[in-house]
Length: 366
Ligand code: ATP
Image 1: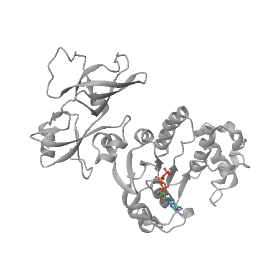
Image 2: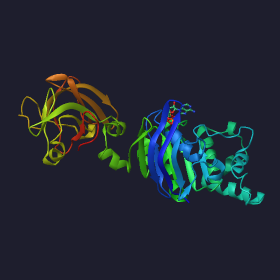
Image 3: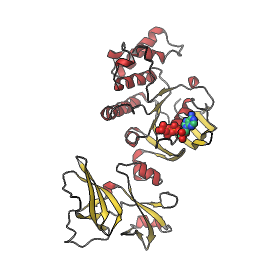
Image 4: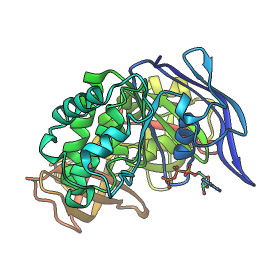
């Protein structure tokens, strides 16, 4: 068993609709990340899958079996929480063994062997006789994972398991967890609000907002072809630029500039009126040319450098349209390059840089 199917899943808490009519299929062996801002309903969804919440309506199936109202103990899932939920008075060994307490098929000796083999897998055999209070955050995290793994469940459910770790350890654990999941091949549903975790770890990610599923798919597909403005802005750091305007005579027209659309874009936007032009910062090119010395192409604009944020290998550059400082763009430029605040530069928006959204609904047109 490893396939999970959520259909029309809804969970209300009084007037709050935490999860609204969610349809989602998670494949056997897949690493699916549920991601979205705080309060979007991702933990509630996970808790419904775990059996810790009862849905208000809808159905949860594991393979073909309806488990919507089954108690957690009868779901063959193991959950890893943000706070690890280890028992402080028990040693690591006892904590991990505790995961097997309800497994009548194991003898005590087999339990012991299982704990030791998982401890080896996680590189924590030296910690088995310590108590959680004697461990670092990263080590506690491994023990919490270990306690889930010893049970050999059909599904892992993880709720922000790395969020209490510092940035460096989080990056290491991200990779380790991903490799571990690949090796074990166990269907995993992982909740986070961190888009980097979602992008780097998942086979597929499901982006939620306000209790509703916005889009599900492979990380790069969502990044390059977001279904709507919410997904476009949620993914990517710095955020995608967005500029309001209209479609007129084959061009995008804003207050301070116009941008000719490619034919491929025009096919998708010709019936549109008010639109949002979205451009990823890495698509905004700052040219070397002197604005005084060259004439501008039709996808080139003179802009003023407002703020430069040096990040080491790159600069994040905030630019204002020279004609009207109310419209601006964020670009990413090579960290070796000298760019001065207040300087005038030519900015090129390539023909394939444009994402276009319906301004009223936020739905992607192209
Ligand atoms: P976070 O990242 O902050 O944990 P989340 O995306 O996991 O957020 P949920 O915890 O699923 O969001 O909460 C979704 C909505 O349901 C929120 O508005 C929350 O306040 C509400 N909610 C969650 N649990 C309960 C509860 N037990 N009682 C009442 N409201 C709840």
